[in-house]
Length: 447
Figure 1 (tube, helix red, strand yellow):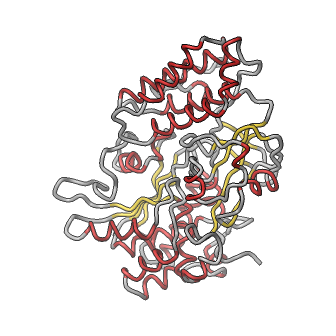
Figure 2: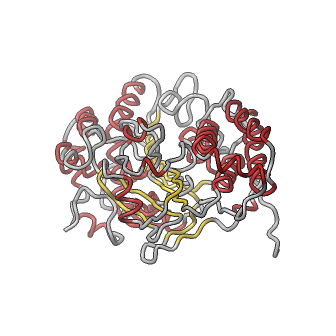
Figure 3: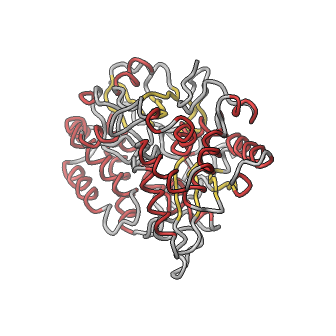
């Protein structure tokens, strides 16, 4: 029998009746039975931490918005369902298989902070997920689930920065996904100087865990995971593995268990947890999968997506591919980010395909220091961490490129379009190679 606190069912939950039969709705009922402050207190006591990247305590985020809302306008809750981190597919799996938990978790968050409005902001290119969320919202609203009628499912663009929480709010307001300076708890949806409208932004998986916490209790949630990182987390593994897929495991499980024992990785050379963290070298495979252990090791758990590269990969080619993604997706609001990011990619690309000189490596290191100047979001920080850490960890391979190009220079950007649950087949975005630095696309060669 599946654990009632696991959020990713093996098969999609087909209907509201099926969801309710498994305990769905009881979390929201409990949230309505107690005071809003008690809802937040229970989430705080559970130790739930955000599953979207930073691992910030969810209850603390809710409390900060509730306190800021006082006389500062109308609070809102936004579900960040704009998953776009390379190597990550877990939120799309959750939305397709268990949209009910996402909507219920959003309704509980709205109750906790007194928000009359909730938004699930996903992408236009995720039609299945949008349909499932809309059907869940409509069915729950029709059955009188408190708050469900105030939930909007919004379809946004495919840009990476749509997933940055303040850029997400810009899209909800009908603008481009350009990150703001002030965070959502200070300057939320449709904010003005007089009414900041503090807003909670939680990702899909974070909200999916909330109903179980309210239904089963914080102590029950803490039975899995670690003291500082309780519960389970949904992970994606792609790349040079035998069994790519999406897997839910207790936090604290060794990384080796996920990558080697479950996904079948062999001869691991390098692992990346998205594009915003330092490289994970083979010597770190026994790290526990939790936020603090990864941070202490000098890297990050990110949103739980891992891209594995095997021994036959040219690490310079890998770095160039990941650097290109970050150079392209920079919005250009901070010129150093765009300019130095593009320079980083171009120098890495030349080194990979043509070889280079020692001065090229010195210049790459210099650009890593400059790309973060005056940054307003985390993208250039991630760019510097990724490139600098890889250059440090695999210095001999970079030096070897001074004598000539890579034998295998072509590496796909691991931006997942589809991950088949049954076969483990992964499809990376076939159009991404045509995306240009201004976010437009070059004509396809066969057009």
